[in-house]
Length: 243
Ligand code: ADP
Ligand code: MG
Image (cartoon, rainbow, N blue to C red; front, side, top):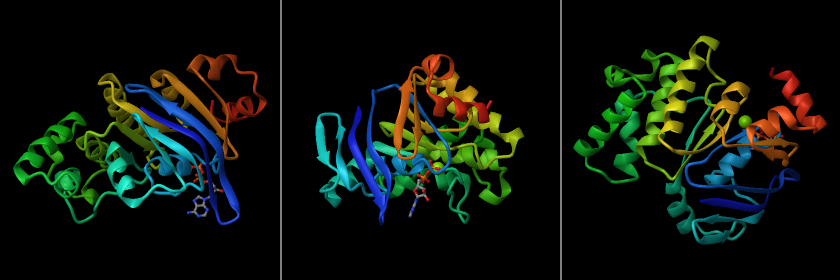
């Protein structure tokens, strides 16, 4: 579904991604783990063209693009394949939960309001928040806000959902409800790339795990290869800190 080859990305002189090779198939769930500053967010953002790579190629389906030369028109078209869920929810403060969920349907998909509202309510129901449709973000807990963020992403029916540490801004007692919503999406065969520090969760839901450090993929494999069998010292040191 998506394949990235030799992706490099720099901020000024600082090369943050040093040649990433990555692919994901339809229906797969891939978790990206790794220390803070290793380039995980930048990689996700580059898949959504929020950051511009300096070289490499990206393939969506059967179309391949040179990332250093890709034009605005292709970017706008390809962006519809992916939607992102951010660590800090990024909800519009002056819009209700429902309005937040349907914003993209109205603006990007140009749906009429009735149709969008119907989908929006269905999505809020999926994440257990139908009764909060008219609430504003500041009337919702962090966990509820993030569930609205997830409903908003799923509403766009993208090919791939990118989740960047969806639970790391939450109080511990609110993490479970968000992980549960993500698990429900896994059951529905959504294709997802998840950056997370929740190792137990990653192990449970992922088909494949990627360990990044210092702008490169150091180790990758099925969960048991990463969490049980890996001999890689950097990975073992990292996992020790999160168990
Ligand atoms: P992670 O998500 O793994 O914690 P990031 O992708 O956020 O890592 O960051 C990787 C590196 O890129 C860090 O050194 C960070 O300081 C740097 N970086 C990230 N975003 C920017 C930016 N917009 N401008 C300059 N440097 C950045
Ligand atoms: Mg990050």
